[in-house]
Image 1 (cartoon, rainbow, N blue to C red):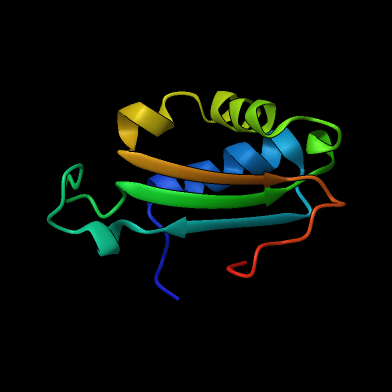
Image 2 (spheres, helix red, strand yellow; image 1 turned 120 degrees about the vertical axis):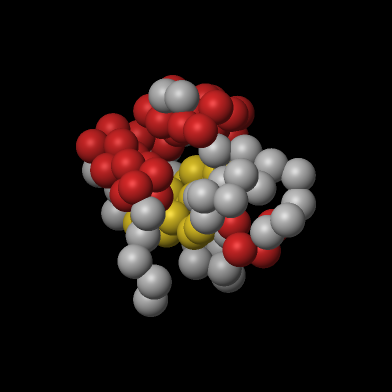
Length: 98
């Protein structure tokens, strides 16, 4: 497994601190977008996250996304070009990709 970069590590830390998730998968998808729009050459331009935490129980999908984005501050949109979120409650099934 390749070593994670500074932004990936920061994403993990911020989400762990904010939500104490039972599941957290942070995927750096930047290599799949090399040379495409938004690729800044840093190797940390595109991420996807699967997070399962009690904080999302009884919360709408939109509110879950907003909570994750708020916890990440300026990372999505300013420091990272693309950021996909699957935020799940403990009772939600994990997607197959996890």
